[in-house]
Amino acid sequence: MNAVATKPPPEKSLNERLAHSGLRLTPQRQQVHEVLREKMDHPTADQVFMRAKSKMPEISMATVYNCLDALVQCGMVRQVTLDRGATRFCPNMQDHSHFYCDACGSVYDILQTISIKDADIKLPRGFRLKLIETNLHGLCPDCVAKAK
Amino acid sequence: MNAVATKPPPEKSLNERLAHSGLRLTPQRQQVHEVLREKMDHPTADQVFMRAKSKMPEISMATVYNCLDALVQCGMVRQVTLDRGATRFCPNMQDHSHFYCDACGSVYDILQTISIKDADIKLPRGFRLKLIETNLHGLCPDCVAKAK
DNA sequence: GTCAAGATTTAGAATTATTCTAAATCGAGT
DNA sequence: ACTCGATTTAGAATAATTCTAAATCTTGAC
Image (cartoon, rainbow over all chains, first blue to last red):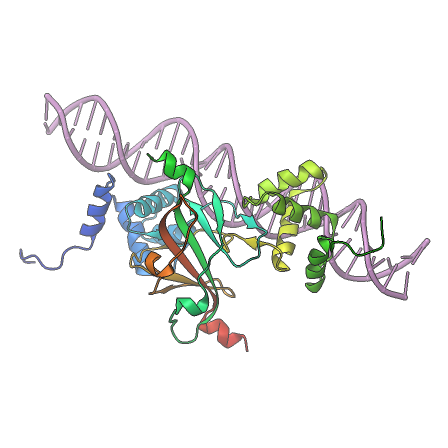
């Protein structure tokens, strides 16, 4: 071992971000983060639990949910789908997208979409693109008003 | 009553679409569809159930799910979020979007997004847009290969 | 260093969302 | 009227997530 700074330890940034959100760096949070980085296959909470458990057998499901929430909150992890909760349905078959109010959870139809042509998405070889789903997130007029 | 064709009955199109998918027009399916069109607030299955139940007290939750599935299948209704199932997580905080394989359910990172500027979305007055989530749907290379 | 306060973890129960099952009913075509 | 397959129903089962209360850990004040 030498005393010279080598690589910055990868946890540094995690610690900083947690701290910035008023959260502590714990072995469980580290472990969950590590599991996610190890195999970036977009696992479910349950898969994360099983993988973390193999390294840290005492970890519980509730902790995995807590850790995931903490990591999302401090910006180290994204939820692939921003919703958690019941599926919603819409009888409007016109081409349109949805605006989600992050404050009150309501959903509005927005009569504008991004077409596959306009988007000009370059996919890796072999993928067949059928549809682009565009979800807009922000505040609805009511919640903008309340936010003052 | 007269024999002259007046307005085409609104069920016509529903019936046709159901038929086209090999499904029958039933009072329950009509009712569920009507509930959705009556108040286009993107209700959950449970909300649809309660609203339908007030007009048709014997309807069951299982039927509401069946009807919603039938309506989605025949193209009369959209699921606001295309996922049903567990939330997935992703440690990649680079700006990117997700490709969902509709056949096998796997998710891939696509290092390209549509920025708020590029999208040039015109929202009604009062909305504050914070983020655009773009989800790509189609077939992954493996499933394209299998599809032959 | 010791202690109190607050944060975190834990197991398990509770809740919520969805799917499954098996029996009853319905409806189209004969 | 009869049959067959589709549909509906109630309720059980499963899956996903959240809640609860007790135990444990950490940090900062002394």
